[in-house]
Image 1 (tube, rainbow, N blue to C red):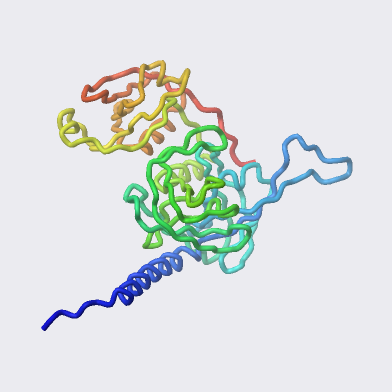
Image 2 (image 1 turned 45 degrees about the vertical axis):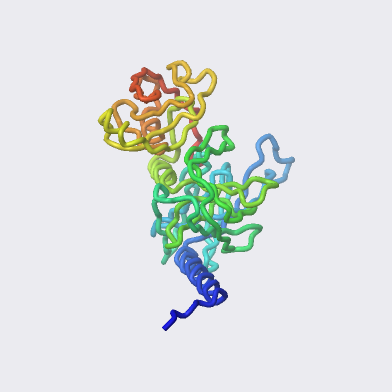
Length: 336
């Protein structure tokens, strides 16, 4: 008996149905956590007229609840210098929010509301992402609440310049469409776990959008909840995560098989003064292994005071040790 031949049209429909169910499940899981933010911000240098209220700008954005006790993640540019923040939940409930912490250098912020029965989003692992993987963005573009767009991870390890001028490393590029008002919403994988915070799109290009990797977000959010702001050191390099050849890792007895590739060195930076070059690979900082950008950021956040540190690098196959003095970035304003 000859095997039956599957109708190509039927097979295509089956694949599309599986894809649709995957997106639906992911959205259903994260939707209760997605919120709409209405923000009023003071206008610097615009004093109030006599007898009138101070002039304010109004804006909107997205965010999502990530703890049961009301902590919400969003973008810094949505709430920076906010004088008033209202949060509208997926069920329509409205609550006044307090700004907990704000970090323009990573375009992340945490606000908090006090509300019963909150359903937090589950946070995933952005280091497990692969190009081509399905992702879904949920947000409130132009005030249309809980708008869903789907796409794929276009690239990993991108660098994006924040509004403060600092490069945000390890950024996710996706073609899941974003629009004004989507900023701060979650980017989720096929399981509905948050893998990034949507932050920007390239105009007038189509399908080039960016999200801050959730592993970066976890670290920044923890510091903002604890201290309200982040003081960090900088060495003045832009880099990306790379996998080391196993033979090279074994040759040098490295505890990890990934590191940070230096893509560029800023003029007048501590890295330039220490002799770092484009193409060097950073493998440790002050005795701590550096498996990726997130590790380096954490270590620099812990070493924000001026002081000499030891940086280990690979240049070609040679292992070198250099002394470097990180500089403190400008202090960041906490909540008002």
